[in-house]
Image 1 (cartoon, rainbow, N blue to C red):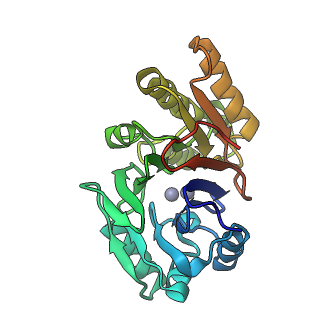
Image 2 (cartoon, rainbow, N blue to C red):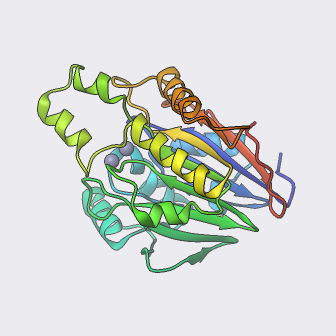
Length: 277
Ligand SMILES: [Zn+2]
Ligand SMILES: [Zn+2]
């Protein structure tokens, strides 16, 4: 089954420390954002959605941590698909894998074309070689993605202006993390500028965004198994949203699940509709 030609569909295949992958399909073209599942799982999930892996235009990589790159090099070598990331991410990944793969560098200075997609890297702050998030645009639609970041940079906030869909990290509930079982050194790392975003930080960003720029759909992403739950993240958003006295429905917020395909967003390439399916 192929999507209709002017339809854009974004599929969250997994989001969390066990693996991350988001598939963006625009008509007959597609790309993957992160490839943190095994190559067999990725191939199966792509085929289920009518996408032949050899026709991916590229695999965007946010950083070299295993939950984002597990299937990247095998997928790239098997199907001759370019891995697209910063120089730091690509070099570190190929060194850690000990073998070569087709690559293409991207930086935060400008947009590159990947098939029909425009791709811009936006800086994140994380304990990796040169981590970034992405803005992926096609036909009036834009999707912004930032997980594994201790802060949301001005670049990322600016990239979200005009986007229809934002996947933003909501890794942990601060209270649950502070009083949870992790060793202090791990807690400090997660809470640091180079760690992971809390429910609190994700909601601060979303509330500021809808106040300044209007409606958006958001996927709370990369939730911790230990320090968060989908219900907790969503309830936190609802509480903040109500407390701020937000009127009508300026944001549709959903939670991406950790270890299985979950959310799907559909839009038309010219008249993008604000809805989650
Ligand atoms: Zn991660
Ligand atoms: Zn990471």
